Length: 491
Image (cartoon, rainbow, N blue to C red; front, side, top):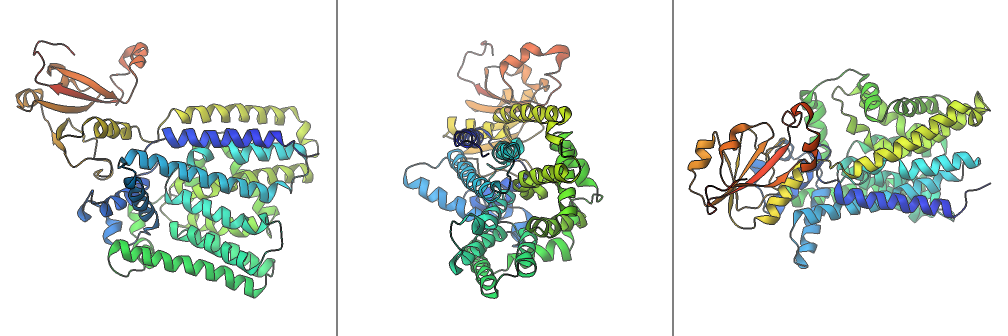
């Protein structure tokens, strides 16, 4: 028994609609590298910033620049149609990421769906492949982890999705896709090494086919070197610089060393417990009982290397997300076939599945209304509303200083100044200026003629300000102060 044609189409539609909604509303970045290593790099070529404002990785010429180059290209294309807004362009980049991610989801689903004869497993696999909440969130991020992962998945699945016998050109295309994965994020090399080793040792693929795959990878690596030459202004091997700085010079350890079990604890908390425990156990089961499988050879080296490296971040495992549906369903099938044939009829199992499905759909809806970084909305309001010279005063914290200063979303005519007191602000002779502050700062109480133009929280939330929790929560507010208004006017 197979799934009806209508059911996959409905799931495809829900998935693509979710990706589009997230691409539009999930503004900002999940991790600073998503912004400062890509958008701020592109800002240099767009003449929005200067080299001294960029992170240390730029000065050590150790970051691949294909993604920043794509940003620059998109800016140039948009400029032909009169659009220079960085906010419209980043929405487009997220939509593009979502579209490519949907292609990768379709390909890996097509690759493995035919392996599941049980209609219930087919149903679970379809749901997980296209509607897993944290996969949808991650699949619109214009970051190196996501782009590397989606091109690897497309390359991983390409040969298996062909409706004919693969030609030599198909192995070359696979190599090109794997090469893109590597150039977007060098850690993908561990995926690629395992993938090629399986083809050579387990599958015993013809040597000429392996040569074509390696040739494809090398062609993209060369293209990446040319892109880096354009960006850095000299010939440079960023792959070596990345290894030399992070591993040989051990600068990676300067960002913190964590114990080997960090990933277990962190993923357990982030991926919706108790379901996160099931995700982790499924990988363990699969690797133990399917040692010769392509997935084991591909994923296990990547995982072990990251466990061995002292500096650990959960985002380093984001490239594994696209493989979770396959690993989980194959592990469920393994448990049923090996130990518990009546698994699908078990009431606890069925309750667990329903509870997960409901929780997962609720989390998808929550992510629709939860931007990755709410301050980008602040930048957008100021960028759009004030296309003339204006001064933004800030109290205590500069909203444009995150890990570093943000220039990509900032107009040249926006002047940032720190204010120490209301006296200083009231004494300012500027006709109109802006003030940014966090909730709880009483300095603004005595500022006249101010008007709230943006807040990181909606006004209605104050209706639920029990025990003054709103005042104790660090919400951002931006006010416009207009000296031309009557000095006796109220807020």
